[in-house]
Length: 324
Image (tube, rainbow, N blue to C red; front, side, top):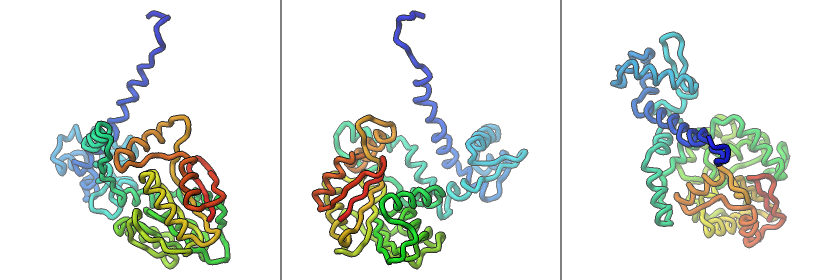
């Protein structure tokens, strides 16, 4: 080998495509109804293969691979669902997210992104926000991380005064419900589409805070949030889906909805000067989907100032707080 040749990294190229096999094999398992077969009592590779109309050896190989991913468990010749698979991967169960996985692993999704790249126009990628909300509602680390966010934003737990919180595009609302659980005097208004609010209601019941929660079905893009009603507003994981004009409108309406000295908390990935894998990926996908992007803190500060906010501070790589 010529020592003067550029340093090459074939392993990098292998890594570019090797990772595709895991999601595609999960896709195959969903399409074959492997998880549903296990849930209905099929336990051996032969039984599952018969139920799914597959070859026994091939099915055993797939089942063993799913065990290696900790999606299934194997004891001798008996295969069983893990609690995670039983909750999220069995068709027909409340928190089933298989449709979302099938959508994200479908070539049609990437064909739409290619159309956006060629035309410069967004094409809705048809994301399943309901199934995504079910997943997030079961993330145990979300609660302590959310309490940390509220604390650094100045909203301490255990306060005695009654606080009205608006959670816009709330999803499962775990971030605001965490504060309600820690502070019984917190009242949360959850705003999202009606089907997503089903998940928020379920989580509020699981967390024991349903009496502190109001569910408000509405379209974020044109919803009237009211005037001087809320002590705090949370905008979490949504502003990067919106265009610049949509964000400007959103922050004007949030400003009106806040009481004097009320605070807005933004929790969203933000662009920096150096490209990163996560931020670049998000920007490409949300731009292709809706014309949004992972915006910089400077962009947020401009929108917030134009809306009337003061004391605008970036608290972390994804948290911003602004005071009315």
